[in-house]
Amino acid sequence: MRLNEIAKRLGLRDITPEISEQASVEVAYGHASDLLSDVLANAPSGCVLVTIQVHMNVIAVSVSAGVRAIIFTSGRVPDEAVRKKGIEEQIMLYSTEETTFDIVGRLYALGLRGRQG
Amino acid sequence: MRELSLHILDLIENSIRAGASTLMITLIEDEKRDLLKIIVEDDGPGLSVSPEVALDPFYTTKDGKRTGLGLSLFRGAAEQAGGRLVLRESALGGLAVEATMQLNHPDRTPLGDIAATVSSVACTNPEIDLCCRFHVGGQECIVQVSDVAKEFPIGRRSGLAVARRVSERIKAGLEAVGVKSWS
Image (cartoon, rainbow over all chains, first blue to last red; front, side, top):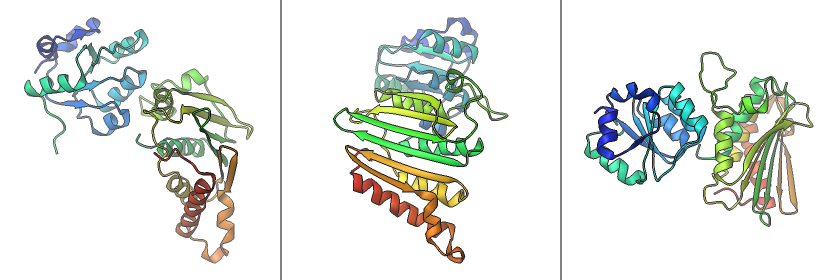
């Protein structure tokens, strides 16, 4: 499913509208974790990451792991430096008041899956 | 990373790659001040850039890599436990990486198997002069890791045997001072 379709269905707030052309990218996989070394080791390439971590490290880890978009849950919003780095690295960033648990459940219902095997 | 000892291993590898020959690992626990402090320092060349740049997760000294996460992830681990990470000059002449954390913070990463970390370094880098210091409350224990190898007759100084004895010494040292940050 396309990122913009996911964002619309889940009512996510797009905090990187500057790179909205990235929102037409199709994603099929997701990963939920707040432990960044786990993201590095286990996130499927091209996935959507669901996390409460808003540190700059989350962008760096996402670049290394090939994460396409990040959904920050529970009302967390990264600061401007992190947001700008996301734009520079072409990683779409979204925020939501909902919890990781609920967002992951809804992503699963939309057909996204975790790492195979 | 699941254990602080893996961050420590990462820093030791950085030091060795940078050309250090003397390394000191200091662990300080202070229950009264709710403090855990870890210092990894060396006699290497120190930083070639400012501490801000070195801590940038997009800064790396390795060719062909776009991110340098070692220090950044350790800083993240310190900050998530109410602490911080500081880079400064070491009395050994090189770099000191000093991480502080709240000892009892619910998000503090466990120390993990520091004995395995140190013994694996002793096994694979026998030429490195490595010393561990543990301070807990008023108690102190120092393990001069590189001296352990000298306890073996030269013909029987296998890396594995040395590593095993180093591991035993570290464990005994941690127990002697009553370290609590395992978990």
